Every structure is written in C-alpha cells, then in structure tokens.
Length: 320
Image (tube, rainbow, N blue to C red; front, side):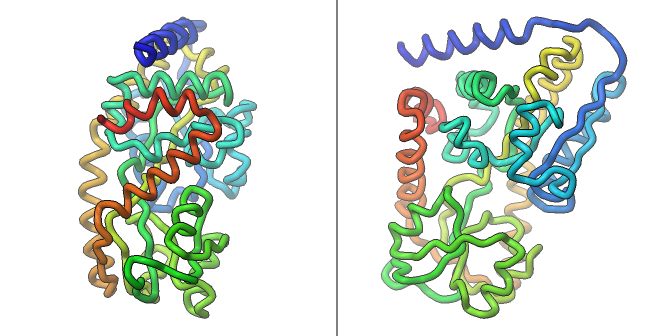
C-alpha cells in the first residue's frame, strides 16, 4: 500500500511538471555531454538513440553530442544540473553525493520497459527532478554486467591479496573476496597489467579488447554482477521549456529504445564473448551466489544514503 501511495504521488508530481510551457515553435537543438568519447563501445547505444531521435523527431528536436574533451566526465552531471549542457549520458554513481540512491538502476533485475510500467521510473525521475534539476529520460547499458577479470586463478573462490583495479561501485565486494582494490584510470590499466602492478580488474562484458587488456587477461569470472547502467538526463528547466510535441517525441524515443535495447544487448553480448574466447580468456563459473553477493552488498551501500527510497523501490527493481 505504501509503495502504491508513493508511486501515485510521484506520478502526480510528474504530471504537474509535464504541463506544457511552450506550444509549437522551431526545432530545438539540444547539446548532450557523454562521459566517454563517442567512439567508445559504451557510448554506441546512446549514439544509435540520438541518430534515430534526430531522424524520427526531425523538425522538432536535434541532438548533438560532445565528449569529455569538451566537458570533463566528472563535471558533466553538474553541467546538466546548471544548464551548461542540455543533456547528459553518464553513470549514476558519478552523482551519488547529490542523489544518494540514484544508482539503483545498476542493481535492477528487470528491464527498463518494466521499470516504466511498474512505477519505478516515476520514482527515480522524481528523485532527479528534486535533487539534480534533471528529467530522467531513460537509461542504457542495463544488463551489461560487470565481471572480474584476472591474470591468474582464484583459490577456492577467493582472491586473497590480489590487487584488482576497482571503482566504488564494487570496492566492498572485491574486499569481501579478499582482494585489494586499486584505483586507476582505464588508460593506465594496460601498463599495470603488463608490469603486474595489478592482477586483475572489474569491467563490463563489453570492451576489454578496445584497451588491449585481453592480451594479459586469462580469466573472466562469471556470472556478471551489477549492471553498468548509464542514465540519459535532460536539464529540467530545458525540459519544461520544450513544446509538448517535443517532449512527447523524446519520451516516445525513450520508450522505443527500451524496447530495442534487450535485442541490441543480446547481439553484442554474443560478439564480446566470442572475441574474448578467441583471445584466450577462459570463463570461470563462480556460481549464482557470486553475483547475488555483489548486488546485496551494493544494495546495502545504497540504502545508507536513502533507506526509505531504497526500501520502497527495491521490490519494483528486483522483479519479486
């Protein structure tokens, strides 16, 4: 009952935000900042969404993309909040200091379309409206899960003393496995693997070949854990200033990509697994509990920032 009341309240608030403030008018040009360069495989789905939006919303909306060379990755969320850029494609864990539970999308086990249907999208959007001055269009890369890659084998499911390149989203999980998380930028990982400065790293299924890491990587530990979900946001003031038909077109494109994304993901997952196998990366089955453990640790971490929100949204995202 409490969940339903919260969802209804969010929906009512969103309806009020969505009242048209502009009617008709010329095509609006929106500048989007991507946290990684456009050539990155992580950005490829967003690029497809933008290209299709520009085609289907022709005469209403035109989106252009700039990368971290124009706006540094860790500053982009603030740029969209303040209206320096109109849109942002980036991982929600970058702005957890402002929206503590914003990264719940990373531990979701239901697809984006289901989140829109069951009220989770409205709840998350309400958080972004209030705390980040942003409209949450959708997210991509959900279901592309992180994996633990290593240069040597684990011992009895443990990685005692192993130095693993990590990020905050799974630091605690790596520590629970006996490993030592090490912070470094992706461009530095190749040399670290070459020199044995690190003995492994966390990374999604996609893209280790882009950095050449497959040359030194021997094992990929399955199943994948936590999604590498990336949000698509619009500055809230900009959103409210769009004509109704412009907002409608952007919303329709969000619904469209949520339907297409599982097919895109399945196709690319197969390509990436085959490429890793060809490079000699061996898949090691760690058992279902491996992923469950990682996600439970992160749920607990997210709950520290906003326990009530996490308690209410978790059933919607867990599909239980």
